[in-house]
Amino acid sequence: MLRTNTCGELTAKSMGKTVTLAGWCHSRRDHGGVIFIDLRDRYGLTQIVLDPSHNKKVHETGEHIGREWVVAAKGKVRHRPKDMVNRNLKTGEIEVIVDELSIITKAAVPPIEIDDRIEASEDMRMKYKYLDLRRPIMQQRLMTRHKAAAAVREYFNKNGFIEIETPMLVRSTPEGARDYVVPSRVHPGKFYALPQSPQLYKQILMIAGFDRYFQLARCLRDEDLRADRQPEHTQIDFEISFVDEKDVMVFVEGLYRHIWKEVIGTVIKTPFQVLTYAEATEKYGIDKPDLRFGMELIDATDIVKKSEFKTFAAEEQIKCVVAEKDLSRNEIDELIAWAKENGAKGLAWMKVTDKGLESSIVKYFSPAIQKQLLQLAKARKGSVLFFVADEKKKVADVLGKLRLELGKRLGLIKGNEFKFCWVVDFPLFEWNKDENRWEAAHHMFTSPKPEHAELLEKAPGKVLGRLYDLVLNGTELGSGSIRINDPELQERVMKVVGLGHEAAEKKFGFLLDAYKFGAPVHGGMGIGFDRTVALMLGLHDIREVVAFPKNKKAESPMDGSPSEIEERQLKELHVKTDVVKKSE
Image (cartoon, rainbow, N blue to C red):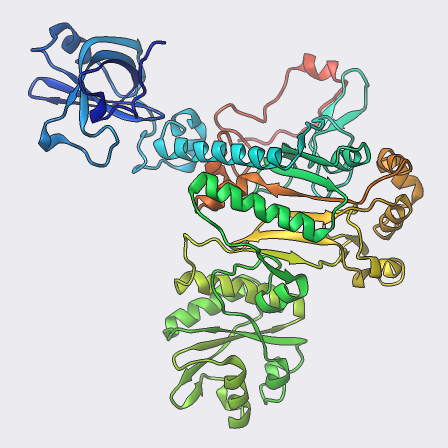
């Protein structure tokens, strides 16, 4: 080994030892002829000392060393002078007086600082990712990710699961997002797809008798990007035979309890709260509620429609949310503008005072109706009631977003709190207005509740699925369900979403054929591993816990992907391009 120790392990107990360290020059300081270098690796920093009175040749070599040069230093561990002890570093009590110094590689001046206190622009961080990854905070985040992956595997292993890798080159099947496709060289005109998830393969593994399967699966989807979405992501994927919803949910609660304890030493409370889809959307306007604060939505339709405020009279629903803070008029006006930007026709408001309710619209509400509103809202003096009126879905969407915005603005969200919950009883189908058809709300392999199977053909909108979503702090971590294991039922569900027998056989024949040979009841989940790690660290952008993410255009500025390929490669793949190149 070229080093005897890392730059993060030497302490006062190492006094007098002769050691060899290797790493990057984090900083270099010349104090009166004595050179001090902070040598860095992923384990930490150690101060090395180049003293001309101790070794003139070493000192001369050190005079030329620049930032991020890679060096190796051999010397003896000694105490730092008392006035130079750094209590913020594990190695802060010692330093190494250098006897031998060698330059391994020189380095150009880095275009971004290798310093957690100075963060470069997103573009620069992405282009020089190898330098960004040298920053201690990025190395700590990826170490947390590594520990979380180890904890996941440990939990599954001790619960009798077998890790099985599913294919990366698969048949293209409709799963919601667009597929990434790969042309086949040996089968001209045919394509593989990269898997959006291992869904069909893990169901086939259940049919094959592997009753407890898992993997940390790579999933690829060609979809619009955002902070918690990448073209490729990692999923904690698992499936279990002979279970119901409760069994899967209890198992996952144990998984998260184990991850949190092993990785960050936090004990999370189980069991998690369970909300139905109807409850979640009614109370919070969203199917992934942030439960770190209250502020539930209040249905005021019946009361408000008795008033003389005609603006709301024709609307399907009127709901309000109570901000328990005496907001200024400027703050209220900002929220009105914000609500309109987020889809509201308008945002009505009333402030609670000693005299009752006050606002420009209060004159349309009789004292009796005002009293009913106050009783319904249970609002204290200084609170502000915000109202949205529209069709139910729009009201839920706008007020759900407003609730979260108020939570942030009023400081109601605690960053170090973890509030998990389950959302269950989702509709199995949702109506696509643009295409004038039903489509699967999650995916078409989800089993309907047994008592709802008879509604499949006559009332698809009333069918609830055996679905369960895991939510943490307002972010959906993953979705799961009990799957269909009856080929006839599967074809009925496919027919509702417009896949007739021939189309179903063409796209999913291999799964339907497998069902004919005896399929167990089974269920499982796909859980976002990147999201899990990010939220554990209090982050919302999963790119911060991914080593080599793509930017918002699904590009990698570091390696220049996606890129054009040579004409020779296109010919081998039997592919012609017909792309209009845009001028830069």
